[in-house]
Length: 374
View (cartoon, rainbow, N blue to C red):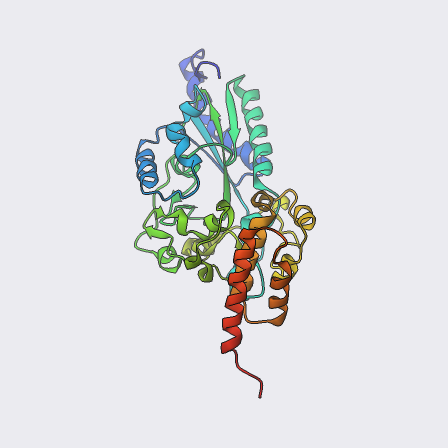
């Protein structure tokens, strides 16, 4: 990056004030034109959030995500990640599908595989990155060249903290960002700049005394307000963890085979959720609320084909099959399930076999207690 710049340095005071007044409006208008649902600007002071991050790491809540600790203060000090950064543009884009209100009912259908709603369409990294680059180009056309870099959950960044400072929402007790007008079903992206920009107003917290997300978390992963123990979180267990899922959490996982939305589904603010305008986020039929046995029948090539261009692909075939095996163990007893599980033994790896054996044992228990025909 080049040395930090102030766009008003070479302007007359009246011209500088006018430029500062209109620039934020321009950036937000360009963002809307590019498909973002909200855009804000912040400085880089995340000292309070850094203290929270350090305490979270000290408690080991990051689990096997060693990179969280390796990156040190780069995550909370933007200029350490990208030298010269003095301003951050944060952008938000909604992803909720049109049937988002029906999502909770899917969790009650044990034979259906529940996939976190954000992962049903195209990989958000690719969608947001393209839009962020276009936004930076529009800004350069207005103020001239400046050093910058765009990020979409692709580097050590406290994106929710930056978005909160930029006024895009507040960090809720479940650690997700919430906006009072649209809820929390959205993605975030950032542009780090060596350009001094006017800041938008920081969001205030409106969780109040509500703690539905804490009370209703299936694995009690929200151990205190604003503190999530990732080691207990179903999103972590099904996506980040590459080893065996601890048995103590398997029954609580139900039919959740990729991620978990429960804390968002129960959040009262999501009654204001906006359906996504982005067609790339339209759920794929092969993934959207499919029968577990169909998903479990996929070969590795089918998995790679059906998840191409999605966020799901990154977990790999073995983790995918591990997750589905657990869900099949949690499903109602079925001879078809027992047969499918048995046929997959010794076909993938020992880790998957261990979960298949657990699922078969669970099915056996269900068979023993199932009502017998007269």
